[in-house]
Length: 93
Figure 1: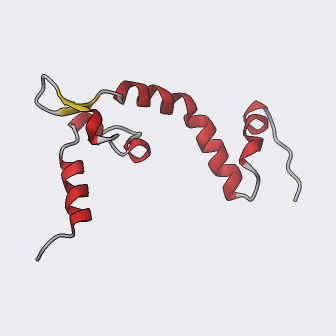
Figure 2 (figure 1 turned 30 degrees about the vertical axis):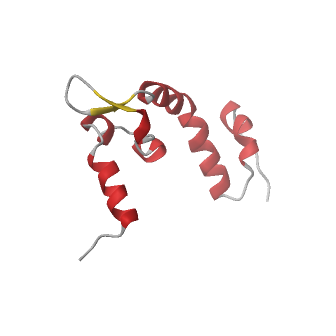
């Protein structure tokens, strides 16, 4: 039973993620980053050199992404995000 090359590559990418990465709340957004940006850390795990930057970025935009997701789910444009976060957004059908 051969694994498809695509599945095998994905498995290899996931198996090389550090424990820090696997437990990160933003893993579903960055997917562990590009393997070419990983280095072998002192802990013996592969760390992404851009991890701290990704974490800072996603932490900073999280509330905006959540608001846009809610707006889109209710049929409103994501461009209403600032109005939605600034105060009560009165929307009419």
